[in-house]
Amino acid sequence: MNYYMAPLEGITTYIFRRNYNKYFHTFDKYFIPFISNTNIGMKEIMELSRESNEGMNTVPQILSKTPEHFLKLADIIAEFGYDTVNLNLGCPSKTVVTKKRGAGMLYDTDMLDRFLYEIFDKCPLKISIKTRIGISDDYEWEEILDVYKKYSIEELIIHPRFQKEFYSGKVHLDAYIAATKALDIKLCYNGDIISRNALDNIINTCPSIDTVMLGRGILRNPGMLNELTESSPVSKDTIISFHDAVYNEYKERFSGEVPVVSKMLELWTYMKDSFTNSDNYVKKLFKAKHCSEYEMIVNSIFRNEDYIHN
Image 1: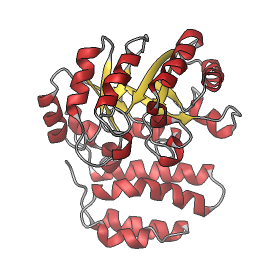
Image 2: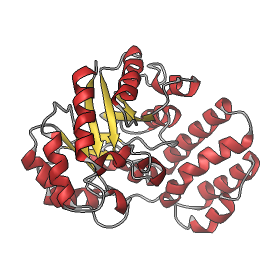
Image 3: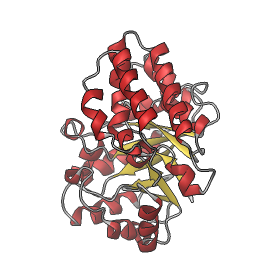
């Protein structure tokens, strides 16, 4: 089985990825959260820099709605030494979709086809795609697959939900199976892998799966990849060391305590599920504004609660 880290905007930053790679089992690929601004600033430079991603097989992701914009970003990414770029056709966020980006590109398959024709014709990089299966109706996936058949997609990462389902309800494994029958390209499964049992159940239904992408599950339990690969089990001390390394690096990089705490609370939205009785601390934690408050509450969690293995 190949394992990929999903690109989660604002969370799986280069600081998160680098420290994850240090403390836990290495992912086969790490996807960099989407780049959408052609005016590359220090934030994008740090995300794309080979030094920031040393020792990791990283793939940058692009969020775009026009071929011209995509190709300009691809040229920039190529300058950093990458040979592959990932197109985001999966983000279900309303703010993204209303601008016809992410999963919003799936509304109109003719438009999608024209977009893909241009970028596959002119892009200097190999192109992989992360996709949803449509907006809301079963028939959409067949039409989308008919478009994908036309192109030499390096890899298709499928989150088998509709855009309107966001991250709720059961995944549509039948849609993934339909893709295995319709396409002769490398596929990757993404969605609801939160434990060994969850992965086993998915593979029992789709035994051809040999590559999976982990997103929210790895944030809820950073040690899960070790459990899935049967590497050395992760201890609470390892989770604490990982947390502290990420936290301290954000303190070094950010100006002011509020941005640091805010960034860490994004992670705790998920990581709270890694500890027993975390609800007793969460309300206080999410009211924290200063590092001293944050540290006091988090240290109480680490001192008093147990790390939950899936």
